[in-house]
Amino acid sequence: MREATLARWLNESGVRGAGKMQFSPLQTDRQWQDLRITADVRDFLPDPEAGAIPANPTVGSVGVYILSNLGNVSPDKRQHALACTPHAIREEFTLRFADDFHILRAPGSMKISTPEGIRFEQMLETKGQQITGWRDYAQDRATHTCSPQEHAARQPALSKIWRHLRSSVLFTRN
Image (cartoon, rainbow, N blue to C red; front, side):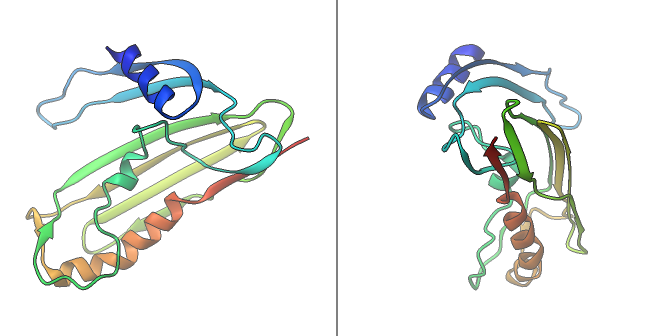
């Protein structure tokens, strides 16, 4: 069902391509599992002449897992505790451009560590027509909930990470 699922995600995204999904065996001692998706998508760029795309573009419902696991990053006032489940996520990615493209700008690297147990690091490297990178996000908590005060203390770091994850690669066609 892996290839069928990936084909459905690509189709739902309105793009054509092929690829494969691989799952490593579940590591029950750490509750960890590796998911690797490799896809070759033709005509992925919204404007083939110039534009911007995320450094880790989404394919249908396969998104940036760190972005979807940051929790509520809006600065609203909270009156009740909320879930702050401890977890760690690592994403690795490669973005390749055809030879007739010029990469104008790629997001920079970033590292954050807070007393509230939030750790984020992203490293990106541009070489010729290829951008490779990885990012790690972890939130360590002794408990699985955050008080309204703890939530407020986490907001500046989470908002900074959220903005950084939304930064884009700028490109033009030669």
